[in-house]
Length: 522
Image (tube, rainbow, N blue to C red; front, top):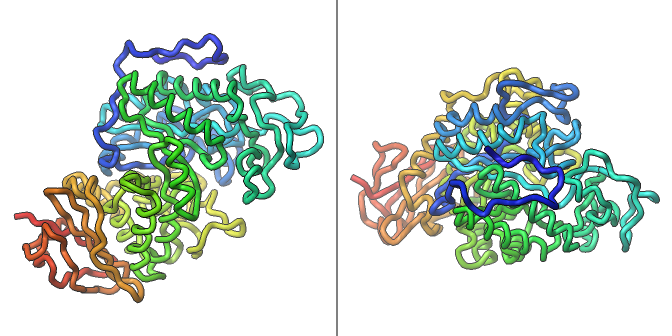
């Protein structure tokens, strides 16, 4: 039986063992992630909506039993790591749950604690792991300021906190910074101490008592559910010393339960690499690789030379230092940015971008629906802007009776026979077969300097090397590609098309929007 959801933390006794907890993987680089917005993914047993389900900012009824019912779909795809959006109790209008009201209670719109425990257990039985999205920077708009929400130097007087706030220790204004709403994101004090607009109230993680409580909340979720890691939202806005304490104590507690490498994934939507590198020094294991996502987008969409992909890798590696970059969480889309495919683009662009994602260094994170070719109703490639927001149009319903859909997402989209699903499954099968594609060091081999075209890199360990050659152009291309020490002069076979062979170091021919995975194999 799982622990019950506490309404007060003062008397909470956390286990330090005594039951079998699921161990951490040998190497997180072996995993393939899949990010799920629970309200939009799938539903089973019940469906609780709120507002008009055809509107993008309402609750549509996806739930935890729905995710459990689709675990075999994800296993068929080749996914080994599920990243769930937050599951904590939120106001009816907060479908994404990034504005929690109660930090230790599962939202009944999504299910029960038992449903979450069952989901994690069934995932473990299938060789899959689960990351839980933990929001510790803020809670919902649970109070109002007496004299307006402007940012100020000292904590302000606020009205009585909302009755739903929990656990009970958080129904205290001292648990919140109370400095007002961020109006200038570039102002260092506002960025760290301010409330997210329009009114997500920032938790005072700089206060030792608040920090104690938040660490206890995090430990409770591990003990109660057996999850394998946390996604920590809004790392940039948390007190740095608190981040170090949280990661240190949570990882130590998880290790005591048998989870020797409990994963802490930070969310920091930076443009430059240096803030990411600084963030890693706080003790988190890895971060979403936003800087490379933004640098690579133009080249992957055929609007810039593939040398941009090579330069991006080298720039990030130099900034991150050591081997930290090899554990970065990489993506081509997620719930905060545009879906990769834009309206009007050929699906071949997604095919080559998916190969780039799954074969490059780091832990790849797919976004729900991308394996089915979901599209964003935009043609923009630059950073997302308020004039053309990514959400909610990147958060469609995936289930058959969903009403918030686009032409690319209409109907039951759990189609294991679709072309994009089959291509992604094939790529993941290759990644699983060849250890160098998961753990090998990445070395650039060739890039087109003048526009879309070939990009080649190898992934190599001491005993194995795999040469990947991608074509971001819609036309066939060829080039002489250096093969690397282990492959030079050898007869190489394309794992994706065994009829194609080439001598390492010779011209490689790649069809439009094609990918070759060349190995020295009989």
